[in-house]
Length: 55
Image (tube, rainbow, N blue to C red; front, side, top):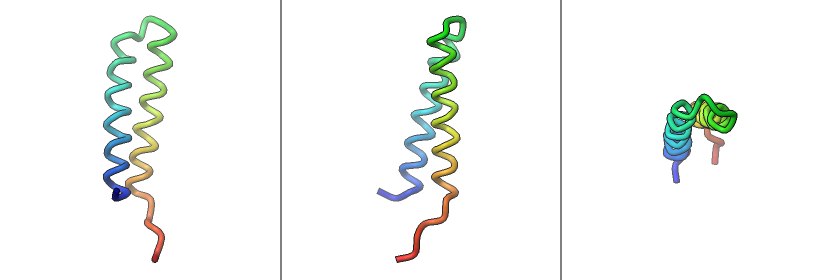
């Protein structure tokens, strides 16, 4: 799997988890989900812009 594909999957999953967490924001669990999803979005974006190693 290409690095950009993995980055898009992680970013998309983070967006879904952040959306669920945002709807449940009044509870501590929802706040945790929101932060977990945002962290996945950041890591997915960083994975997409990371330079690939030379072969």
